[in-house]
Image 1 (cartoon, rainbow, N blue to C red):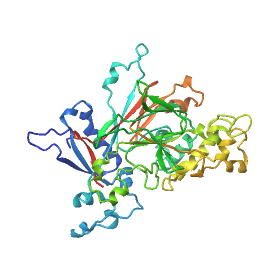
Image 2: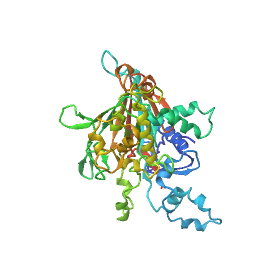
Image 3: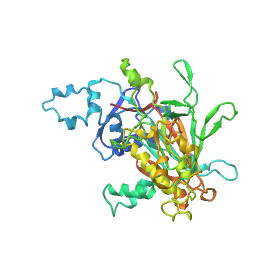
Image 4: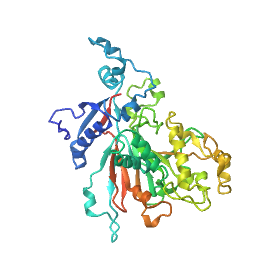
Length: 449
């Protein structure tokens, strides 16, 4: 297939869609998107590169996009059109061709599919503080499912090393156990979008944080610094200091596996209310312009902070005999990520207010003490999971010589980036810059669902 941007002849409609049936998983879809965007990244934006409408059929290994569009527990849409076939497909096959049914019936409009573009930048020149000339030729990495660092990326790297000795899925469990206690020291900056005009009014997509205690998006409230505009008058975004244990972003999917709902508030579909109102073209206005970021910062946890020693599972326990911070965090991480298998219930977890007030005054040892640190569901304390949405972000690993929180392994692996399952390394002392590309009149990706 020729994946170069389509050039239109005189008189040809530029909005004529290019419809592609993708028979495969997220990896196949990623390869298609990557091929299409290569020439677009080379500077041919003015020509326009076509409207690409994807019909994704989940016959691959990983199918996060498909199962986010069609969660296994949801009832099937109307598939009566299949009755006209000589042999109607089985229910199992029908459940895997739902996008094709949507395309054939035109019962809905295709949904905008935002693409994240990640640029791995080298450090600025020490003399002028500017990026090297060669960095201008760095091509962004397109992703349509996930861009992650920290634990998610570390598990993937470790599992690859275990592939020969543990070829099955067991290697992922082993890799998770090995990586769960690692702290990744970095600085993350989340940015609002530039102001834009929409529907005759000025619109700005700011940085927002989910508050499970009130069940809505609010101004960021957990520990952060404000990034102001150059003139110092407006808020450009926020800065989050590490160390981090989990840092995963997506603009498109709610789940990575059928049952693992890591970002339950992410959806390409218009809100249920707009669908109930009969707004057939709601997706045209629902541009899907947010990146959702799921974050775990271990030093926000009072149970972790109550440990006197910052040791990890790979080190010996502190002299006092208490479990190290890494070991304590591993317990918390297992608790939190386990809740993601309960329809994304991890985002409702809060630290117990009582434990936050007594932070540092007790050892946290023993069964009774450990129970007092257990997370609550929509309690009064701060949320365990920091869930943000923004327009862009950057991830800048901290140099080993400048951190007190991570050992050499954890700090070095903070440079790991997972882009739709492929591993990349941020240059030493460099950073990753992540932006969002949404469909426009010049082209873009849409998905039938």
